[in-house]
Length: 458
Image (cartoon, rainbow, N blue to C red; front, side, top):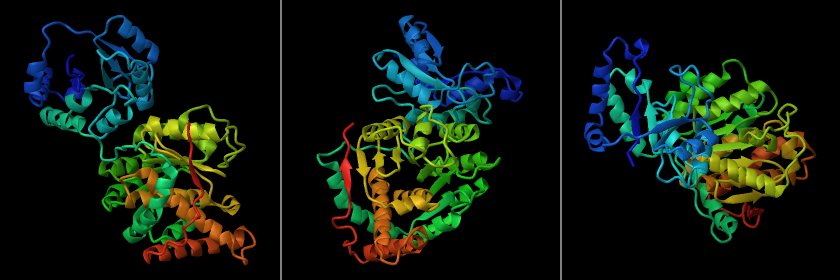
């Protein structure tokens, strides 16, 4: 089988060539992989067929294709008659459907550049088949230095992205094993004083900042995307919470997302009200195509919209009546995590957390949390803090944050002077601070016997 890890597609468009000769540009590009190209030149012709759906891919294979060009990955100005932009989700679906065709190579094409090629290779992978490479047009043909551009692609394709998740197989009594590690992870977060960059809705800014300060984190509330490259260098985390969208929000989110992805720093996505309007539904699609999220966190309606299951329209940002039972919620969280190759947290009376392999249910918390604006949004910030402090097991990091947060809520609600949501909020902040203080002293009594967590088999 021919090696298709880096596949140059030439383009003679004057705007792409920038006045240069096509042959000269191709010759320069080949210098970036000359020895490999010389060795791999086939003696006989090979046949490649472009596909953009499972049906087209299956027909191409039955017709005898040697390789498939799968796309369009992202929108691109060089293809004006693109049938569909399928992204990593569509590509992964095709790879999964043709996993038995081990002798057929696959390459992704469309809008691929240095900033997204690693994510394309990583997130397109299905359980049993991966892309063999990528097809590049303008990122090489329009490059000032085609040779250097080609060399950079070759290097990036061979290495996983910094944010790559390696989910762990579930152990016997996985939840119990994870619970034993939680106090140490909380202590680790407290000692780290993690930086967290919040691009969050203006309704909850003050409350969320106070929550972050209470646990010992260092928050900044900065919605302007141009600041992100500087802030990403602080090696903290980014939270994108689209609760109060405006005309500039998505472009700012994308700039920040790409800056943190390039750094390999954790990014949390809270698709608030994802199913409420067409604008929000489009924002979800744009953001998922625009970068990688280490954690997607939302209520049932929001997670269903991210999955793309034609969720019913939400009323504002509320989840609305549940239409799924516990097993279905757990399966949705797991399947979305597998598809996106990240961690998914579906919040509710019972929280479901998965990294695509392990699925954990968390039953801690108190109903007052649902009566105070911002408590759900703050979980995104909390998760970002823990993902910054503990990167080797993202599921454990998020679980530790949830338990610290929800046990603090239980403690606050139990105070005799707490009579409702109004008196609950200051008590809640105090209890977060109390757990932080205890953890810093090595006192785990706040946690012993408190976690109501169990494995879910789906």
